[in-house]
Amino acid sequence: MLRQVLLLLAFCALASEAATCCCPPAPERTYTFTAYAQNVIGNGSNNFTDVYVAGVQGEPFSLAQYGTINVFDDPVTTTANPNSTVIGRARGTSFVTALDGSRLLLLYAIQFTSGPYSGSTIVVKGLGNPFIGVPAPLAIVGGTNNFSHATGNMTLTTISQQGSSTVLQATTVYTIRP
Ligand SMILES: *[C@@H]1O[C@H](CO)[C@@H](O)[C@H](O)[C@H]1NC(C)=O
Ligand SMILES: *[C@@H]1O[C@H](CO)[C@@H](O)[C@H](O)[C@H]1NC(C)=O
Ligand SMILES: *[C@@H]1O[C@H](CO)[C@@H](O)[C@H](O)[C@H]1NC(C)=O
Ligand SMILES: *[C@@H]1O[C@H](CO)[C@@H](O)[C@H](O)[C@H]1NC(C)=O
Ligand SMILES: *[C@@H]1O[C@H](CO)[C@@H](O)[C@H](O)[C@H]1NC(C)=O
Image (tube, rainbow, N blue to C red; front, side, top):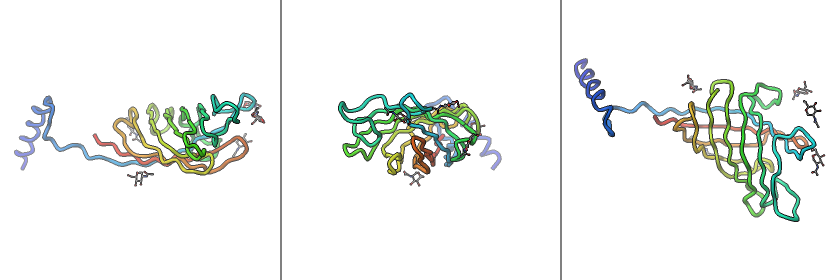
């Protein structure tokens, strides 16, 4: 048995240079985490994190109006309380891409600056409109460091809304296939 293991190890060492290796792959692992984005829609007169940048001429800019484009840079916190620890920023864009306003195309990256994912970025994309109560099941499309080779999903839902402030919950399930 020991001899077989040593032979396998020796073979793996030789084969590691080759394009195809017979060595058993490291097992894939699935992880979950939940974080919160603190979003404040603004127009220059409040402490906004999310701004309207364009929309359909003659229509009011709104997250429920087809054609509206926003850019956001939301603090990401450990709990729903906006005063809880900030662990990163969710930076990206939303485009109202459903004619009836029911879906945004969301495209953003979360850059983690503290906590277990510090120094890592996760990139997500997909459809939904949590601002009007339509959950957004987003696809994980890439990442760095902890999220290198990650696949999975991040579902965004609104858990509270007060005036221009919205707290979004991001429930994430991802798998790393080494
Ligand atoms: C800008 O935002 C402030 C605070 O949310 C709001 O009171 C005001 O009506 C907004 N102005 C415009 C032009 O949308
Ligand atoms: C924006 O935040 C600053 C610093 O926290 C505060 O002093 C200011 O009153 C805020 N402005 C508005 C319009 O909420
Ligand atoms: C967050 O902190 C501010 C300033 O200390 C306070 O006014 C506010 O009530 C706090 N919000 C929550 C949800 O705890
Ligand atoms: C997210 O991924 C998990 C694990 O694969 C799966 O069980 C769940 O249904 C997925 N959710 C969505 C919205 O795709
Ligand atoms: C993130 O990556 C670092 C460095 O590889 C590792 O030490 C840490 O355990 C990872 N954290 C999580 C939550 O996977």
